[in-house]
Image (tube, rainbow, N blue to C red; front, side):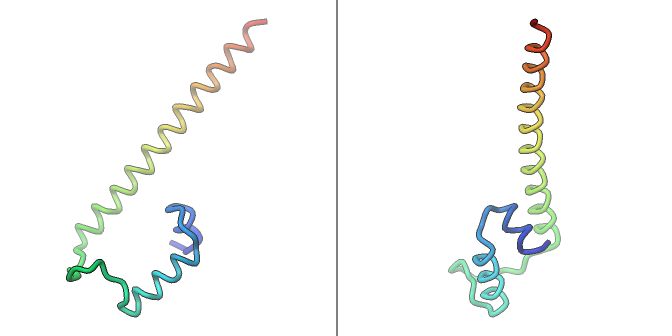
Length: 79
């Protein structure tokens, strides 16, 4: 994923993401605890959680759009 795309998806400034990447490559980012390697399964779970969250958001948008258009079509039939 490109930095601009990540920036849009997580609503964080591009310069912050670039800084975090630079720090991570230098080994300068830490959560204060010992870092454990991330397993492939953990990465997959994280990816699926993001996908589920995105799909839920899209579903809510579609529900609102359907309600809006249904309301508009009712207005058009009331002459």
